[in-house]
Image (cartoon, rainbow, N blue to C red; front, side, top):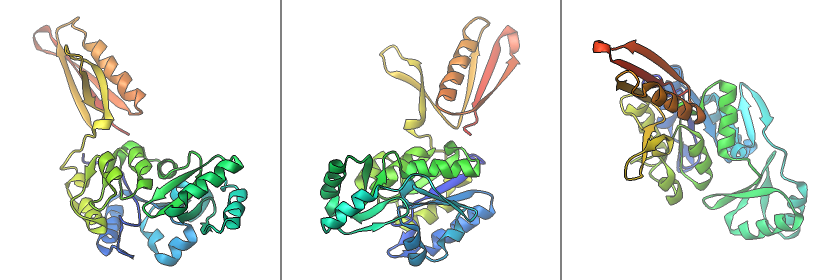
Length: 301
């Protein structure tokens, strides 16, 4: 996978932190990766003002910051909202009920124990919003906004394909983040739902696990991860089970005599990869003894 991974997307709390402090080991590895030409994206549910107070200077370690769980993007000193703010009517209703919350530029942040009351209030008001959990906390966001959509917006600004991204998280709100990236990884202290859906679960916790990952064989290209969710179906075996190939990184050699259907299979592979959002290149070479071979390579970007 040398040259394939072009960016890492990292959650903050419980991932790049150790307790209430930033992991210095993780930050050192993030800085090293950036010097080596990879991009780093911070994806957090925190409100920006609270982020800067709790972790002053953390933004300087990243090429892009996605805050408020995908609702706010910061790149090169420019900030822009990625969605309209949650309706003030909900904030007023929660205040009238004595439910504690904090107002971000887009989201409302509160406590998970108030989830039922918040959902009920939003329903009474007929608002199109969603409640997303983050361990003991929750966030009220416009419908369709997630850590995953925020990551995609950041990658568009950086001109990087999500297929070339490794994402790491620890909590429920990171499910969309891991799903949006080519490879989704959970730290050892992740909640069970994230561990279950991750392509890989690290052996170490939070910042220690991130530091080991960034310094390890996956980003160096020595260990290849081919997520099961990133496979494409190219046919079925006699017993009806699907025949699949890795969506990336994949090199496929198609061999056969003239008229055996090599071009058909190559076209099928290309169609499946392109439909999944990947790019491919092909080479055709004359084979020995009148045979032919055709190779298709998935570029992934």
